[in-house]
Image (tube, rainbow, N blue to C red; front, side, top):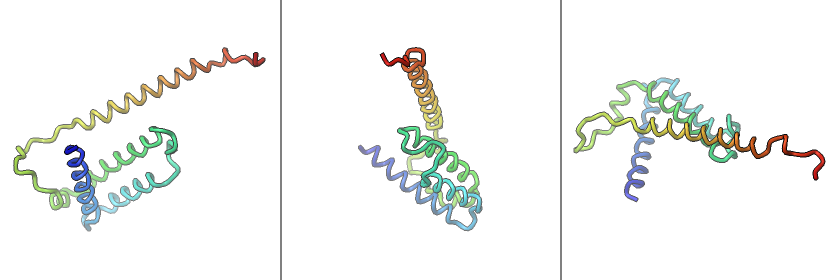
Amino acid sequence: MVRIREAAKNLMRDTRLFLRMLADQRTPVAARLLAGFAVLYVIFPLDLIPDYVPVYGLIDDIIVLAIALVAIWRLIPAAVMEQFRPPPPANDNGAAPRRGATTAVLVALVIILALTAAAWWGYGFVASPGEISASGG
């Protein structure tokens, strides 16, 4: 329970910092436009995969947001990031953070693609056209 609460606090803090970075005058207009387009894509009802499709409808929104966030993060100048970046905790040893999240996302996408392929193949096996008779009896 404590981890979820900490994660929520960190997410809110990072969101506020990100919005302050976007509001800074030194942030390029391209970063602001990209953020606006990403938000509009999530809100707009027409997507690559419609939102009413279970699970897959939200995955395209998550992927678009992730790509947009990485692109925006790279467009923000280092001076702006240094100004808004919070100081490290007192017990921080200065080591670089591990990149486990990228691996987790890639593994999740591979699993989703494998399940999609298996479902597609299974549906074709169950409802093959050769087994359905036209006579109905």
